[in-house]
Amino acid sequence: MFFKFGMSKSDPNRILRLLPIAVGTIAGSLLFINRLLTPNPSDFQARSDALGVIACAILILTGLLWQRIQPRLPERVDLMGDEQFELAPHLSESLQTELAWASHLLLTNTVTRSLILWYNGEVLVRRGILPAKREVTPGPILQRVLDTQKPVYLVVLKVYPGRIEFDYLPENTQGVICQPLGQKGALILGANAPRSYTRQDEQWIAAIAEKLDYNLSQQQDEAPSR
Image (tube, rainbow, N blue to C red; front, side, top):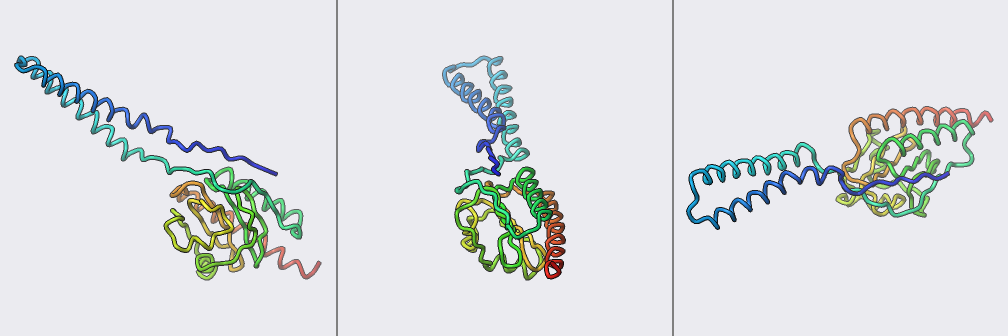
């Protein structure tokens, strides 16, 4: 089962935000050139030039304010890897359905492009854009998540020296969330843009992880009786 995630790398509002700055700069430059070519301007022209300069300054200021009010969207990249969807075969049919549903929601409703569910020492789900490597070896970051039972959000993965432990994610993954699943596992999510998860996304991911942890622990408790 495969899904494609086509995302535009460009900011659709970039030209609109730059337009006032460009117009103000060009108009101001033309006013300046016109003033240089007019050695003895009349009083009327001087007043017109002053009003033109004020208008250009307002346009440039408006453009600069738009840059702050409407910041550029994080730059997205094409993750290195192949589209994959793998479920551990020993899971019950109902649990496989639950994990497929949850992973599909996260991939289609958040910026997540790579998803791994690691639980009780094994990978139960691999979905999205992923490299060939399938094994997950907990490094310092993932181990801290398990020990503290608190999620970790690496907003710009490339600036963290510990990123090397996530070699089971695409090499150019931009952001990572490690969400604990109780004390036995974690939901590891990779994004194709830095600083792209919102606070609402984090809360939603935590709620899904809590539900998955409950269902996984229930199956584990039932396993000896089968």
